[in-house]
Image 1 (cartoon, rainbow, N blue to C red):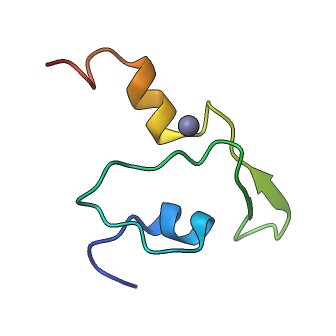
Image 2 (cartoon, helix red, strand yellow; image 1 turned 90 degrees about the horizontal axis):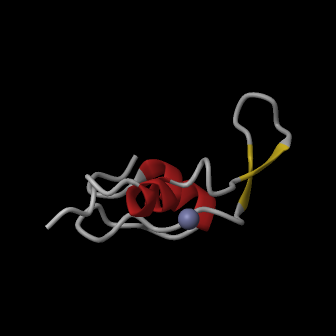
Amino acid sequence: MTPGTWLVATTVLGRPVPVAGRYPHLCGMTTTATRSGNPYRYTGRNCAACAQQLDPRAGAG
Ligand SMILES: [Zn+2]
C-alpha cells in the first residue's frame, strides 16, 4: 500500500494517483473485481469524479 494515493483509482488506472490532485474519472475504465474475478466496468454512476460534478454542493465556491 502506498500512502498518499487513491487506492482504487491507482489500481484501476494502473498508475499512482496522488490524493493531492483531483480524483480522476474512472468512468469507461474496466478493472477486475477483486472478489469475483470478473471484469467490472465503471460507469458515471460508479465514478466519484462524475458524482462530484453532478453534486452542486461538492463544487460550490
Ligand atoms: Zn467520470
